[in-house]
Image 1 (cartoon, rainbow, N blue to C red):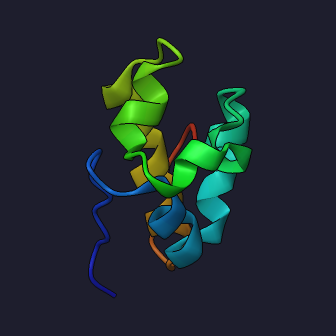
Image 2: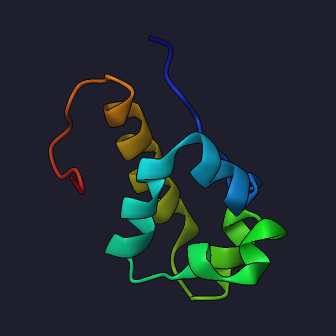
Image 3: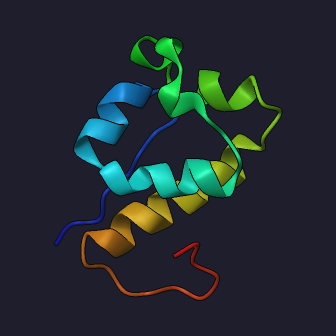
Length: 80
């Protein structure tokens, strides 16, 4: 299976609709964006920046999880 790449400009709602397990990464960072009404309009980057989280680290964890769930190889340090 081809590697999936989630980008910071992806809409939060669309992300969760396509990759429901992505919610695990938000939970691991203590972020409740997914339950916020703004999630329908905000990008991942907008939601994460409002919480002062390093976007690069967050995106790495998010992409690692999505690719692992899609059948990729397990990587050391995975959130799940």
